Length: 468
Image 1 (cartoon, rainbow, N blue to C red):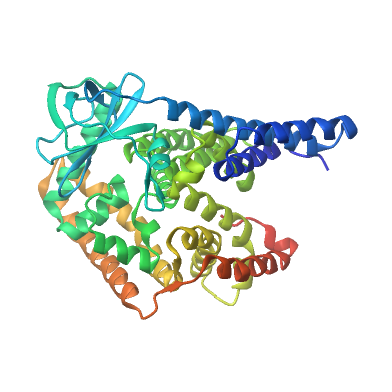
Image 2: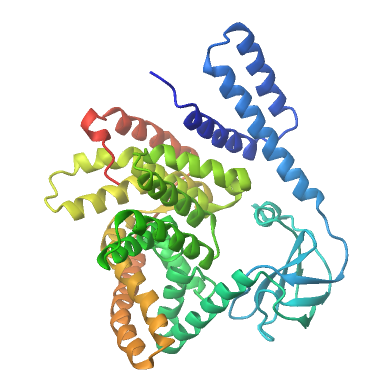
């Protein structure tokens, strides 16, 4: 059987980045490459040598990328720069990323005066280098975004406005207007949930709400993730079909809308992964070619990690999104087959998809938090059908608000009913006794690995047909 070398290359590259993320040393790349060359000299036709050399190159790439960022230090305590990312507003502060030449500084400052993307500002304060905060690698967390230093409440003075990219300024200006319309119509808790769901802004969510979402297993249903991009893409495509566009034209326009929406929500890694995947699938359909979801997933992962290899270790959203999608592809057909006793096809597929995704993200949740939600399956099934409605109405009503307050008010009232339902599910799921199960990491893997292997070994040929 002919081996798909592009697919193999992408898998091995992602694996090499994973190895380097936790065993980053100068000699590791050379060991892989040397062993690869030795294997090639003995068995020139084997793919093992190819895999070893790619592992070495990907480890070397990770190490050089990390070292270049670490060396990109900035020592001035007084400087001028341009705000190069959308400011994040919290209830007691705003966080802004300032670009000074090719360096990025994270600045936390007071809520007022409010700054915008593209503002040129002058800063005077104490520059700090991030490090470890207890067991949290704050330096790596910031480095994944290219940030090498931070400042807490320095003196900030506005020098000039509109110095950023014009296209990005227009997008963020439009986003700000939508945000203002949402604030007019909804209460604070509903506003926080909707902004997180459609705008990618989680700063307004209270710590209590975030904790409830975590315990109920619904964090991914609120914060922008790959699932939201998939829903958005599906909604746009159906809308374009309904107004009479041919399939080819609808796919092209959908790709443009997906690109715009990923930028609109701040381009988190999970959204980028989903955007690349859907874009590649739609592009293949435009060319009239069939594609494997697994192949597209690893190609998308390769493209994203080639641009920023630190995401695999330091971006929890990317980890969860990638593994959840992998779970859907690998385990989805199996659970869909096992759940044939559920007569409703829609409910069966939702249940199979939820279980499949949860199985693959469990290790990340246990490693990072020490627990996982045991009510997540039920809570996800209860809210899954609400998400498309929330996204459609949540995008529609602020758009209507730009033209008609009355129409926006009517739509927001309908949306408010679904948001109330979502909040009820979150509250009651989080209140269930023993809603979260705390388990030692070692014990978890002793149970988890044999269980997953058992599930994989139960596969039958017809169970391997992808249903997503």
